[in-house]
Image (cartoon, rainbow, N blue to C red; front, side, top):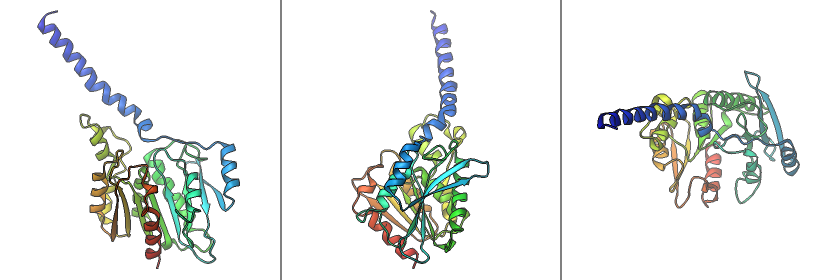
Length: 281
């Protein structure tokens, strides 16, 4: 093969990679971003039996998709604040029922919880997408705001990882008493650039979760947890979002914690309890 032919062949291969790899990633991005975790009926029934205080909530989204959530009402009589919980991209949220009932962890007297199953997760139907998750977050807030005795100004949002994007969008669209973000990111485009610096992710990405563009306008109080050794979302992305937040804010850096170890930090749940108490007084 001549040098010229070899150069042409190399150019063809390079062009194929340059075009093919972005195309493959564009088509596969739903599976790279979302990891649905369905909850089988038998397992769901077992969870309901183990946690009798948890009420199963079913809603019909605007497009007819059936959504599921777990509602745990405060054991203290009277109007109670409520925390809407949005989990990570591979999280089936029923595990939180144990956490919020454990006095050493998430047990917060006088607070109610609504744990949200994304589409395709838990017992919710459908397939996840950014547009669907953001719309469903608003629908679940509207459901919570209509609960008997509920004051819409006493609703909090807690978003973990991917759920931070849902929580920030909700804060921009509805009235919240406070926002808690756990290992959040500035935007999914920014995170994708970190992992794929050689790809044109700005135009490739369909699900952008652009939280940082909304943050400067938000005046709702923020509690932000950053894992020092986060190997999924580098801490710099959370730091940028925190710095851009327009309202009162508190940053908690959990040293020696990774992305999925943050719940085990000694200061994690106490900081949440303190924030909920301060923001509702």
